[in-house]
Image 1 (cartoon, rainbow, N blue to C red):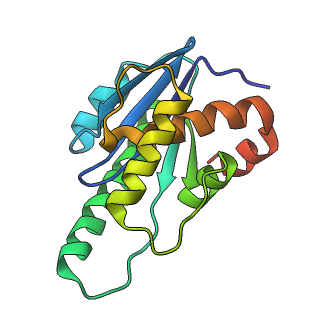
Image 2 (cartoon, helix red, strand yellow):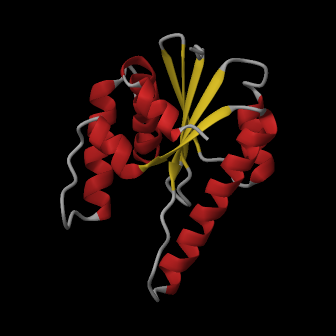
Length: 165
């Protein structure tokens, strides 16, 4: 069974996305890079190392709101670019639906919860689960996706193999 030294979690969000990196009991977080080349630069730092990347899988938006359509298009573009960079760098990667990592980490889904309230709740959870001095709200999901990756590798290799691309 392959051992990974670096676990990367990516929330490919259009305006509130981020990349989380866990290695040797240390967390790092950075804002989601903009575009293929910036994503490549950010992840290329880990080329040649035992890396696995967990990318939040993007659902499709059905609706007529042009603002939401634009945001979803940017989100899908970021998602596809993350997948392409992982393939180009030869990284193992998993596509993780939000419901999967949230359920695994026992984060309840609150029906009707406003976006900002959810972001605040996830931010508080991320702060409580890491040793980071400060986590920005935009990075909370990436932090939790990274934690999901760490825990799934430790306790549920079967789920990992199911998610692995």
